[in-house]
Image 1: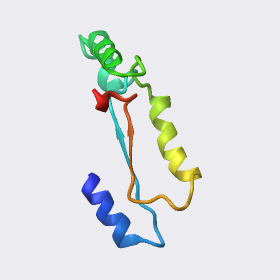
Image 2: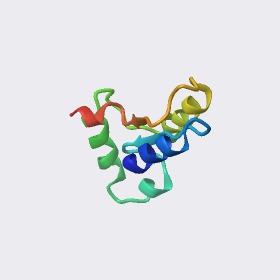
Image 3: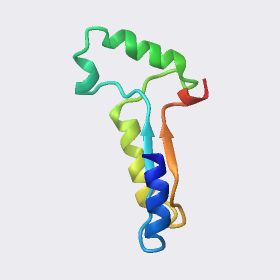
Length: 88
């Protein structure tokens, strides 16, 4: 997806900007809430994140809003929304 986004950003510029969002663990969703070990997974994600909490849907929905309302000079970017978990 990252490579595809970069290729599309290059091919469709300057008329269209293409950016990607890479979320980490997102709790409080139907995909995770029904798992028998959901709370354990959520706690593990929170502990591995420098921000010390698991993301919720509201955290991730801010990413496309950022791209929609930010500088028109951003394209080909991947915004990682994982509370810094990728740093560990």
